[in-house]
Length: 109
Image (cartoon, helix red, strand yellow):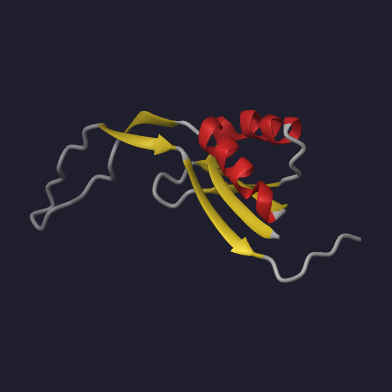
């Protein structure tokens, strides 16, 4: 048995959750926030049989989309006290970060 932990952008949460239900995959959803953009994420925790891990990974890969977004970097002050103007930059966000771990014991009560 494996524990799949998938961190996805909030925009993909509902679609991914529905895909898991359709495939009869039980997942626990946790609201989380990212460190880089401090934006909302959802972390899914899925305990699944070894032979179904690739099915879970395929669903996550299909649903979690990368997209481009503009962000304004923080304003930095140089030694003279002048600030450099911050201009929006385009970055790529989304997709999924997935960890897979072996489970030594699994109990349901």
